[in-house]
Length: 364
Ligand SMILES: [Zn+2]
Image 1 (cartoon, rainbow, N blue to C red):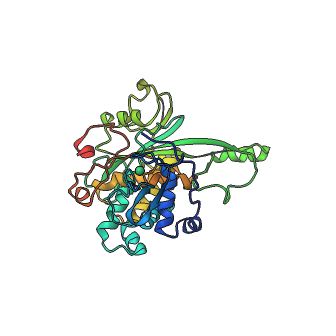
Image 2 (image 1 turned 180 degrees about the vertical axis):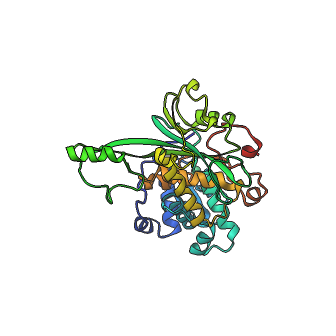
Image 3 (image 1 turned 90 degrees about the vertical axis):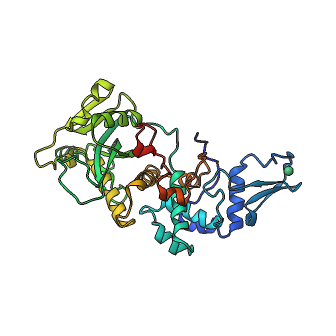
């Protein structure tokens, strides 16, 4: 279950972060405050006096009882310092291009690559809130291939690539400022069709724009309706307006309680970029991130974790402080964290969006 975020200061910039967390002691002090927003009470003797002890990772009460500061967070049983974990959580939750395990290892001077790799994956495991709300309103849906050589979109056969279902909420708003979209507008803001812009600018009317709201991304086994329809049902509220292309896998959305708006592709398959602009922009950013930050080295069995990371940052791009707290695992009770051996043997199942489909590929 998601707990409400503690009402506590969180860093809003890297400078803020450096000022707030100069030492392990400062991190421990912070954890102490986050964990006991209404004051400390020792679970063993009910003493109301306690102090965090950074070097031992505990809170000690006035009678000498010790309570772990790290349990229930991503840092549980870790030998890495508080500071290293705080840096990892801050960078992962707020840095737009994210950070690769190799960069992270080098930047923080962590001895082994495996340690850095596992830390980042533990953070990723904390990023999916188990009870998060479904998307609603107006949503663009499409699938894309990740990995492998590029090919035309007409072939939906799988090969060595991973197929990913993508859903983006459409947020519409009217801009009456009369300004051109400049620096105050993010790259996800898209103006209405040209004829609309010309007309409204001539009349001095507000310009209709749209931008992305929240997103969902899930590795799916194939693009059949047996897969796509339950995926949509577990991610999008019934009654929503769902835009898709003409693929037959989406047949039946209407009878399942959605307002299905289908845009037929032209023969060359390039028209959907114009008609599903938000989902296409998102997918191109996802691909750029995977090939840029991660050098295209993300393996199929870990892809869901990277999608979770991308989605987490995207959905919180306007709320950096709370994102940091959530990434530390402080606001979500996740019981299991992956270990290096389970990550590598493939025994660890990255939390998918939901248990919407029980397939060996997703749960095994
Ligand atoms: Zn005590």
